[in-house]
Image 1 (cartoon, helix red, strand yellow):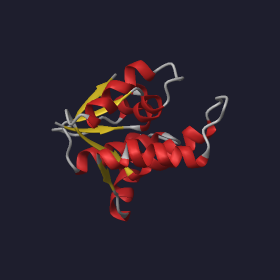
Image 2 (image 1 turned 90 degrees about the vertical axis):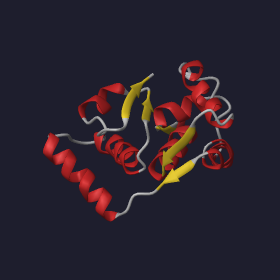
Image 3 (image 1 turned 30 degrees about the vertical axis):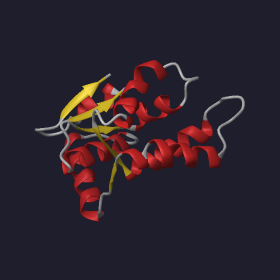
Amino acid sequence: MKVLLDTSVLVPALVPALPQHEKAAPHLEAAAQGDIDPFVSTHALAECYSSLTALPLSPKITPGQAHRLLRENVAARGDVVELDADDYLDVLQRMSDLGLRSGAVYDALHVRCAESVPVQELRTLNGRDFRRMPPADPTELVVL
């Protein structure tokens, strides 16, 4: 099954100290074991790096550790989906049509990636924003 994992799943899956780790980790494990065919957006890689290096942990996750975590546990185990300028403009049009503002655009990029593959499921821990712009069929939004 093709599954796009968003940042809200990836970050806690990678960091055992986070409260959502137990909920998120099985999805990355399923990818590692070949039980799902995982996809992530290029945007998710940058978003994860930003989140990982900003977490209030002691000790902090260094930039090198964040890079390695993403390279070895995310990019190496799945397909990374790139969007082009037309995709971005389509995302902005969708946001405008729906009257959505601000940071919701970043979730809309995940939706566009999920639709472009297309994947069967877009998995997230962030149902609030995604429910306002759910992916088109055949992609199902799965809020963990």
